[in-house]
Image 1 (tube, helix red, strand yellow):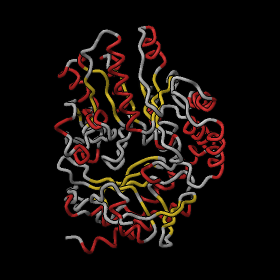
Image 2: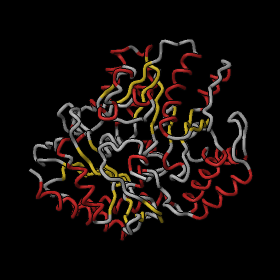
Image 3: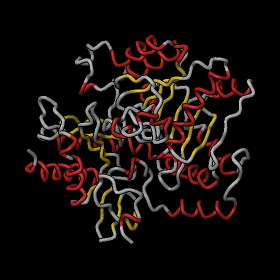
Image 4: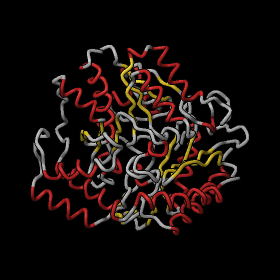
Length: 443
């Protein structure tokens, strides 16, 4: 069977890898190669692959109960809700389940609009977000996304919702330096709220640390506390999109914990099940849901919401993370990874910035280190670096088309939480070698 009969669309990604099996942090290809998966797939495989314990859980659940209407309750759902209530911030203990992150973001946006509508404020229907962002592949989630490459060909049907620049010190949109900048990146939210009127705005949604649209961009420490204060003062719900950063990726259970911020809504996915089954999650402040219940609100489910198999696997994945202390390990080994990336790559003529925390790191590539000029998108530099890395046995998650002109590249280093010192060293040295492979052939 030809490739075009397997893939829906070939796109611009070149020849696909054929992966036969996986174990821990490693992938094994059809032609006999072994690859270290330093991207955790699409930043998904937090607990590593090939865990027979999870295979047994899945088989047992399917033998017991495979599907019920999401209005009903399965034992697996009860267990997961109880466990999740100890993972999420206080009071964010009302959970809506989906089949993935895009659906979860869509549901969170819908809930924000739904909530204000029940409070007889139907005019509060706009969603503010950020320019460098990606929130998902559905039309609502894509409307909230600022990723120009992923919005292309759909802009004409998306909601025209307002967007502000992110906290991005390496390329400050205001040309300022931290900490003398006055935190204009946060005050931009206040200005946008005033421009549109708080009475027209349902929510502000943002990734705690920009993910694939910026190649990992952690904010300055004062950013999120001020954002939260601005939202609450103006009656705008705060949605933290933790699909990528949640469930331990940054060395905390959720990234908002780095700044002691409590959003109204957290969106999760990816690491919730570690890739073993598809699942997304929306955690909402119980007070908001109770207000909706008092107003006789009814929020429609998806067909596969709270699927028993997904709930059983998610509960066991979180149990594994607790038992093996994988969030703590992500923080500790992540600090080693960051230090080794900096020692190996600082000073390389293609590396402009190295940033991150936990097991969530980005290396921004530039054509000129001094001017920070990015490579043009048509040079496909990141793809060439990724191909060189794969030839050497390393996969990372690519982040390209980042800037306002769709130029800009970053390699995302986001390995599974089961890596050790040997993998840290292999990632750093192999990435350096891959950059060296590509550099002589650049103009």
